[in-house]
Length: 294
Image 1 (cartoon, rainbow, N blue to C red):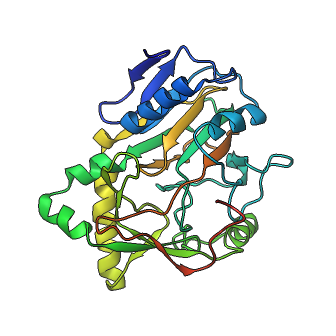
Image 2: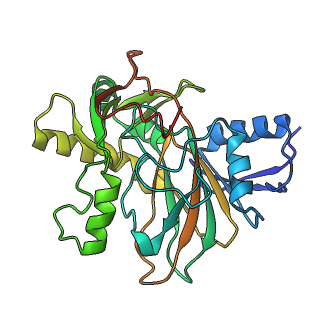
């Protein structure tokens, strides 16, 4: 019997969980129910929680072994699993799936709000499995056979000049270079469902010329970000969000002027993505990121 409330936020993605205190002890049955809700809704939202960094870490660890904070970006001091997401330190104003440039990207991500702007600063999460189902059959069959290279050395500024602080952030982010080939269509390891596995770190389609590669990635990405596939969460202080990193992309619009916004992220370690053919992802550049994920 469900021990908490599940209320859909969007028709295709997202559910708010009520009647659950994440600071308390969660028994195995509750965690199993939450995992089932995560598989069904892709993103779960918890209002008015009373977690600190240790509490967020404990909650995330109920879903599996944790990664460290990030492969290249330093963790919060004294909290090796916590990555500060601070609007004053840079803004990831781009659709992406977390850390797909390594061979084993995270299974799931948790975000907790500490400082929320008076307006803007929402988080958008998109259902990449619904996007795959939306593809015309011929395009689905084509995508099933494609592989994409993901890298942390992408041009996130897209040719715009970088100031000194942004140049330093880029230097840290690319201090270790990673390039990994993942299937464009990933088979979910728990449900067997297919979904598009691309996003902001996907640099090119293997075997295609640059222009054709970019055009195809833009076409596939346009299905991910259709409004019906996207849920928008308006943060309040204390909120916690848990999303399936194997089936979603997310985006934080830079629409809150110079107001402060601070979240903390803790991620659950994942496995090697597998495509329709049964083949797993492979490294092109870099190492297995053992310092980051098991």
